[in-house]
Length: 488
Ligand code: NAD
Image (cartoon, rainbow, N blue to C red; front, side, top):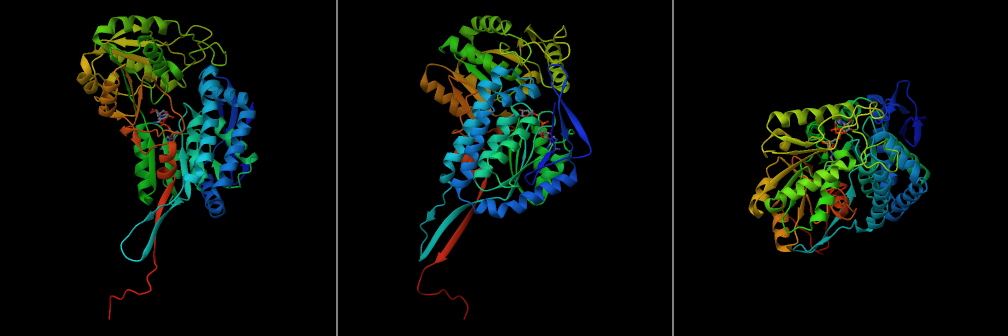
């Protein structure tokens, strides 16, 4: 069992209070972590502040080189990272091996490579002036991340923020702090100067988060998590007018037109709903299927979902692991009960899995609902569990109307072979990320983020580097031989 301290000022700092991190698949303790409080938040912010002048003065190349070395070290410890991510989240090892760790490496390499794009511009102003802009880092960035993809979601903040010259305090989710702490170790070994990156862990959601978001020296908050907490983060950081970017919840539509490549759409519909046991912000849970193929799609979706290999997340054959925590299983169960009460029909699943060897974890059956009205709570609220709902529609107009019947706007999937229709629908759906004939593909080059209650700002891509982690300074120089006199 590993034992971790806090990572502050380039050192591992122990605390008298400790807490246990457990494997959600069986309840076993997998590590012990330090408990940060207000005092450690102050220390971490001060150490990030002290490190800022030197770090921000270094060249992009030098900062990028450290990210590249960190990427290399993660690749060398690939299996250790994948196993730890699986043990702390409950997500299948085939997912963390195929997605989380390779995507993390790709993000580090991408931001190391595009750092030179941080250029200013010259403005052609009237008169004899040289007017130009500089992209400058904010200073200390406070980053807060959720539990579902803990390493990758941390790195998509850490890589652009650091390469742009910011320093940082990261607060991972209480139940999944381990890969963030391993990331600190890797950055340390890669040569990151003390204080540039700090990690604080605590078991109680809110304690460190509240202190960090309200800290007057944290100039930028980058938050990923639920909409309810995101709103609170925004409110608390308003007191010192911090720049805030929020990546929040979702209730994404997955629209299958009758002319779609049926088998491909079906395969991706399963991925959109059961990858990570549905615990994805982008989960495409509202599956709208055009009437002529609805029956066939429903039959085959259920048949395929029934074949999912449920098992211990560390077993390479497991396709579907455990939900992450008690609250999550209770919430999922509550929504299935509510759906039934409202008149929906459970086509499969809908229950916890309680027989051994699953009785010690938070296992829940892959679930499919039909007879769901778009106004039912189950179709409006984010469940964050393996609950897919199949709803028929007729024609493009109705697809768009149904897709937009949500307060969220994170993602959308569109399946058709008619390129004109695909693009018309893509432009009409209120979502920050639209996939046509694919789903859940998030390469580091493309911006990613939500409309409406799904957040603001865009992570990844050049947008993120420029807009999330730098601020613009406008410089104007008078080059005229004459001088300007207003008075006298
Ligand atoms: P959560 O909102 O409960 O917690 C997210 C983080 O916020 C955790 O680190 C938590 O400890 C912290 N936190 C809790 N209270 C806080 C407070 N008062 N101040 C500051 N921080 C506080 O979310 P979760 O349950 O960990 O994750 C699931 C949610 O995250 C879902 O809603 C999901 O859609 C969302 N999510 C969004 C994206 C995205 O990119 N849009 C990605 C992954 C997850």
